[in-house]
Length: 394
Image (cartoon, rainbow, N blue to C red):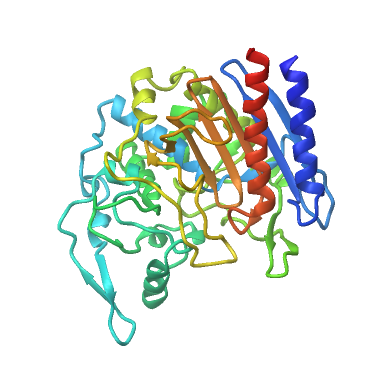
């Protein structure tokens, strides 16, 4: 039986991930097909100090795995004819006109700015081609924030996304705060907080209850502690390292908390061509390369406590869609070309394979991003799923 073999094999991978030297503190991993979860597992602890066991219903800070949900809400508004992807963002969020292009810094370290020649469109935000960056993936963005006292993103404020454009809008792909701006567009169109829009348009139809920008008492009780790995490789639990509660702004790019089982309902919706939420044509569009000749790639770190330098599957051509990374070639794990994936800063990784009707999510709560313990565990996890699927299809 496939399910039995998945359970045995994947449980072993989870145990190895937490038990080997320098391993992850705790992990939750789930695999779904179009019908429901075919594997659920957890290993390790929520907190290495308290030794509270990691459980399937543990609550994770989702970080950038939030983005796809915000993107789906925007696509719902496109379906409803309330917004067009080609619209300039300033039509809905005039504050974007305050954002300038960074040309460099003068001898005193003051930013040299110019007006962009092109309006930022919603399409550019969705595809990460608007020119925005992230403070932990860009030395320039970081320097700009420091020189202008722009607050860090982890403050969950609108001011924190009012940074700077690192290049002319539309010029290239660069991962950044774009989807936080998409969230502001959604709020402007609907006249409601993003969390409320997601509740009405996505969570409610999919019966996703254990997910929110603001932690309920039950969620706080089950929340996995964030751990950081220091220079010596030791993990340090940081219970207070958490997005402000309740947040001043619902951050569409990184602000959701959830148990992983809830996220699987969203993945299943996409495996089932939008069932109960989106039209199948919309999901097809969401799964296609939107970059044309441009490509998406890796990242450099400008904060080694939060992220390592990295890239998913170097050497494999990758593009971007609304709003996922698309592998344009088959991957070493066995995932076929043209499928979807993305990740969250605290070492959370998911993939959505619409061709085979399979999706998986691997969740830990640890920095820096692409930590070898968690990331290599994830690669092993995805590879084992494809190996077993192939074996059982013969």
